[in-house]
Length: 216
Length: 216
Image (cartoon, rainbow over all chains, first blue to last red; front, side, top):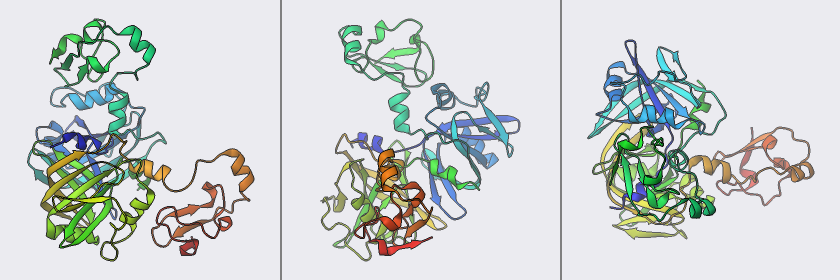
């Protein structure tokens, strides 16, 4: 199986949120698609081990914020690589309570609010069917795609030949993986080898230090 | 409801195909997403009135071709605005029989072949869950997004001030809709008013003549 082909499927970048009692809960997702156009229904997919999945099955109401290309990687990392079970992801972030849901408003194109009308068990994941109750466009910013995120927010500037030649010692072709978020630093694709990065360098995805990286 | 917000959901561009006896069947879709990663399952959504939906429920096997930005609007129009019930969409197109399915290979990044493991009735549409059996990356071309398609393949070149000034008579702000595919020609957004277009002008989406347009 050539899994690389699956990388060419196109997705957007979203944060789905809900509220359990007074607790704001949410996570990053890229799998969202509209299923019907009349009285429209959306489908989103959430891993069963995900805390937001567990809570959404109870609350049956959620908001989906559509991230724009302006969205910061810190926002995406916070909602993508941590669990609402353990931390308050909404602290210091721009969100607002709308229809009793904590809607992330930070660098978004718009948001959708809806009610879960069905949960479909698909092995490791669940598909949630959501009847849209509100939808609001907030800005004319360009929606961020998953591809954009991978190409532009992983902390590696496009290679410039002069810098490449001057800044890089001979690459050993080593690869290092962040033990927190899974981000891979590949010497052969970077201008600077991992070992030569400054000590205060942090993971471009989740922000932890070099000491959290494991040599593959 | 502010439906404009829904336009900011991101999608790719795909052609899903299957084979009924000796008859090649298929249509354009933008709603495809991966649901699980282990022994992976995809979900696609198809309108119930769609002939490909009807046939896929029988054949239970399909190919999904991932279109690249090189894909021509004629390919997309053919698979998007006509029915395999009435025409042979594969005529004069680049496709190949792979695992007994007609896989469209024209300007694609890759393709996926799979088996329908479940059909989920969602009002006007069905979600097909497809277990991936084969996946192949074909080229390094950029996958086409739905946004790219709307912005680049609707036949309207970016406005250039000199042409705009010289070519355009005062806009009456009229709008005309293609009765075949639904494409809207909006005088206020074009360099040339609809009435001033040459008689051999054709719909940039489905290729029919000016006479098929209705003034809104």
